[in-house]
Length: 220
Image: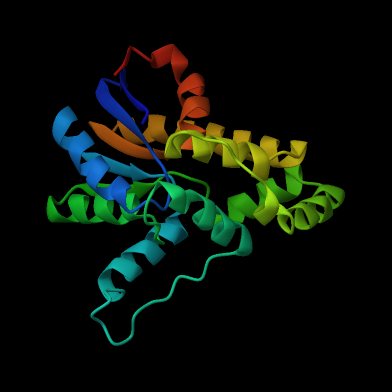
């Protein structure tokens, strides 16, 4: 678990690393927020605004008790990720930490914002950073993911190791670095609205903190 607190634009900013998919992350996040006890004005999720709308729709309509339950169909890499991550506990989509945080903010009338790139920006960034050759190589590599072994003692280390494997090609590394720069920029923007609590993928949090390092004051 990675948790950082620092001051920016006169506001306190809390960054909480999460492992996408683990059901236990919802309970762990609740404990973290209760431990930190932040009285915050804005919550942030590391997803696009389109994904946030989809998440809200899922939470509203996707209860297992509903007749028209929404199905979340993962991609092949996501399926393999879930299979390998399950050694650390039950796995579910959408990420339980995200749905918990959405409910938490809505119950307390706290604004919740998405701070990753929107879909149009992501498509443009993908085309800028990933060549056609790398796209083909990545498609071939994804077919071999299930047979790859990852040695990791914790889910956090697993998430970082998986990210290194799935983004081994330079273009995909550059794309993720671009995401980190955009998310850091948006975190700075959101901090102008008051105290901010932002969830960040465990594999991205170190890069974002490095970008924000000039304003970093305290690591918990």
